[in-house]
Length: 332
Image (cartoon, rainbow, N blue to C red; front, side, top):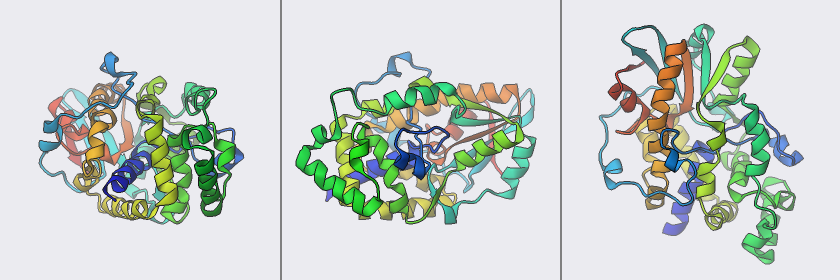
């Protein structure tokens, strides 16, 4: 059970922090019907040596041990800096959320009406993403899911997927297991899903607001490539065969998000020893790389920056790092 729970936590992380509903289509009509596409997180832009990881990177023990003072319960933070007259805003999202819990505060809408640019973890309008996604999301030629699982187990998994989720796993047998995890999200969550990033992206298109990104789209796939295929396959199989733990964790995470409890959200990254392998890769390196990107966007105009709320808390959280860099960051 311990091993299972560790894997489910990693699966939860994949669904909630490394998945981005976004405007590009996948060749399968079943995938398109779900309206899901993927933001597969990347490594630090500031460290060229880490942009193409081949194995999970260990986390220094002090990274988890050292925690910042608790942050105010707020998803919206005002960013200012001496010498720059305007303010920018940081808004914490969860990338997949039940429709019944989706809510955009009036204050956020007011800010959007005055913003010059909406900034995402990556530029969702970048054509390079859709061009490279089909290639990156698929297994190497000659490798298929039946080969990873064995024909008998794959057939059993396909039956469960057809019964529980209503799509044919065989149609997607050339996709990397990680990218199939979001397709199970609707069933796990138990109702239609929404995306804050999609909402903000649609707002930008409808109102002619410029968009930007904190990360280079060409590096979006580095983290997934760092997770061995065998581990990805185990994550997917775990979710298909034993979904109850993940369902409970979803409920807990959404309760924390509703409470705007950034510290509690951050702990979802720290609960499992398995996460030590990916903590730097998913959070620490990226947060450090985002600070100069946020500074640049702020200097260029009033920016509304939407990124995962799990990036906010901790000594290596975005809020602490921005303050260390000379910004004033205050809850709204």
